Amino acid sequence: MALQEIKVAGEDPGKRIDILASEKTGISRSQIQKFIGKKLLLVNSKSIRHNYRVKANDIITLTIVEEETPGLVPEPLPIEILFKDRYLVVVNKPPDMVVYPAAGHNRGTLMNALSYHCKKLAKTGGPLRPGVVHRLDRDTSGVMVIALDDAAYYMLAEQFKRRTINRKYIAIIYGNIKNDGGEIALRIGRSETDRKKMSTRVKKGKEAMTIWKVVERFRYATLIEAKLRTGRTHQIRVHFASIGHPVLGDRTYGRRVEIEVNDRRKISFPRQMLHAELLGFSHPVTGEYLEFHSRLPEDMERAITQLRSLR
Image (tube, rainbow, N blue to C red; front, side, top):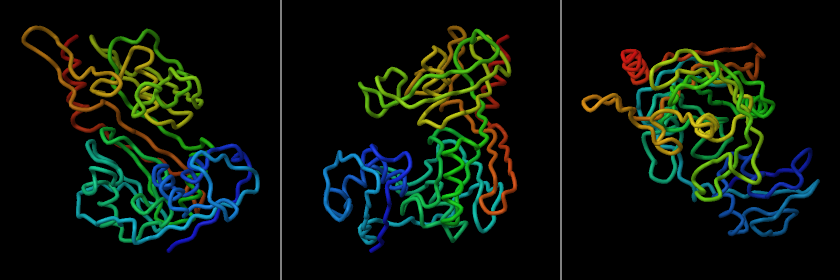
């Protein structure tokens, strides 16, 4: 068994126990709820309800029964490694690859591949997502960093929390957006009508800001560059859908999976046209600023070529 202890301090008092425990350990909220039900998570040595809100100086004790949790299965999957040392690895995640195992995706994930190629992974972050400090959606491609060392995990996580990470995305959005640049500052939270989706139409949401500018205009679409000031779930996809310009190919928030040019010609988008082009951060040990770029994948290059032909 593994034992973790957390003392509630700083800005944490008032948070739900499952949210706080998930943030501190990297274990999913649903799994934390199971631990609470089995009395494997205690507060001040006492069992609590699932909706308990923590108080200052509470001591949270989490007992993880390791044999109940399956481990990562190493798989020799091809993956492009942009940088690697003993503390972290930076990869160029391809589209149509899940970051870590979950229900319905036990194999074929990025973490399965890294478990094979890196051998040693961090222990922090959960048994199936060790070292994962951020993630990209399955159909989003581009640069990701994963910690290989526990200390590096916490230092990288702190940079994400303080919003000092430099992130730039390239997206193809539907329609001809009015301005050449701007910002979208709309709060994002869980949709009240579909809990699997995020939305800007919520009573309570978290601050979210996306800075964007036009790179190129097409007849039916716009190529844009977007920088994140915050890192909310599905942020770019939700923000642009909310202003009427969803990311092309996004089946969840836009449903614009093809453009009908005429009766004989259509341009199809097999996945959301969203790519994490740049990631910059300070090395968690040396302090050196590192910046990595990822070229556009073939499907986005092909889509741009097709859209240019319609002018």
